[in-house]
Amino acid sequence: MATRVAVSDGGNKKTSRVRVAVRLRPYMNKEDEKSEGPCVRGLDSQNLEIINWRNATETVKYHFDVFHGEQTTQQEVFLSSVKPILPHIFNGQNASVFAYGPTGAGKTHTMLGSSEQPGVIPRAVREVFKLVKAKDASDGWDYSIGMSYLEIYNEKVLDLLSPNSQDLPIREDKDKNILIPGLTHMNISKFADFDKHFVPATLNRTTASTKLNQRSSRSHAILLIKVVRTQQQLPHRQQTGKLYLVDLAGSEDNRRTGNQGIRLKESGAINLSLFTLSKVVDSLNSGTSVRVPYRDSKLTRLLQDSLGGSAHSVMITNIAPEYKYYFDTFSALNFAAKSKLIVNKPFTRETVAVVPVKRSREERETGGSGTEPQKKKHKEEKKSEHDASPSTRNHSSSDQSLMDRLIALEKRTMSSQDKERLAMLKEIKELKEKQRELESKAMLFSQLAGEKSITGQEPDFENKTTALRRKQSDATKPNKQQAVVQPLQVSQRQPLQQLLVVKKQSVCIKKKEETYSDLIESPGGKENNTKSAWESQLDQSMVDQSKQKILQILNTGCLKELKSLQQIGDKKAKLILGWREIHGHFAKVEDLIQVEGMTEKRFSSFMKANIVSAMGK
Image 1 (tube, helix red, strand yellow):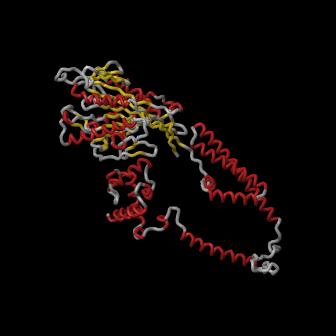
Image 2: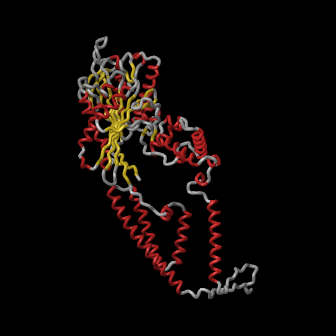
């Protein structure tokens, strides 16, 4: 059994502010038509200023965590802004890096780069493999790395590692983690494996040419690197860290980009998602308990962990120096200034293997709640104390105290740390051994008490008991003589008669058991007890074979294969994929009832339709 444990650093609930870096790209081709020079310039490694559009003689100054000027290299951007957060993913925490800015400001160059100047993504992945290699083999941990790559195009989540996939749903599990059922996840063991999958997947990303950018990204791209480390020895702790590398599409002014038709629709979807992202930042900075609109956009839904969530986040804001980008640059700087006020709360995601402690049926009943079972329990205890001998009372009281201690220790075990858990498990084992000893002693005492009662009795067929008397009613007189039942007379054939009686009694019991077994339902429920009328008319081997095929499709089938089943549409197939992503494979076909919207009646109709269809083929 595994339980999810949230462990914060240092024992206290730490917070981490979103780090904001601003990168100014150099001039493209020539200066502006008016030869007015740049509209923004850097002052030092953290400060910059931009001309005030209301008064050209004034400037507006901004302060950020890092400012990268026009001459800053890709290596310097990575070392100062991205590399410091990578070690957190090896402690079971999440990290996020995303590039923001207007179209044509250099976001894709910052994240992807080129073969001569690799960007943040290839450098970060190479650094992850370098950190894994640097880990000492004797530290007692095993590491595994996997990758997923997706894009958000026109508010549709598309898998770049599987180009033929359709719009994927976004789900949230019971631990508030965002996941995408059906998204391809590939295990990689070296950087060459990553490069082999990443480069072709990047070519699948949607791009197009506009007036401002020859190769403009028409979608938001998100690369997920998942690092899982597992403890080699007991209790086999497992920590999972995720690194999100996000290349956002740029906001666009359609009056200057000249977008029409499909390009205009794409631009509207991009601007709408970025506007929702701005509303999320405003809600997080408002300081009041207002609703944060994460669900208003697919982008903000996936960035929920990065903004106000549990990740160490870095935002690289790309800006352009030309005057034609002035208002885009001005709004990007304002957005970056608001984003650096967001506070995240990172914590360690850890899975710990817990040794299950088996409890008897009586223990589970005593542990349950409810007033009626407790009253019944108290009555039984009083009755047993009244009838039991002093020796058995002592054993029962000590046995009850042991049971209370065992239950309390089990509750503490589920919420304690590793060392305390091991110590308490040892104590539970010792208490159970003592309990067994006390139970054996109690059995001996009960046997001795039974022998004494047998030896103290009169001969078998001498009945010295008082005559049976009926209860006196109000109408009867107290001095009226009651009927007396005489003791049985024993003859020499008594053993033979006794044998015959016993034989008849066994036949009677057998018939009663048969009648009761017909009335009582089987543990599996009504469906296991009696077959449906249509199912009883079919060959059982064919029915079992059809059920096995349906179970195989439910466990391994993709979205298209699930939709090939009778009465399973697009929505129901996605729900099945989501259930399978969270809970794992279906143990039997009847587990399909646990999927949302699948009632017993619908399940029966589903089974009938699929089995009859399979046998008709």
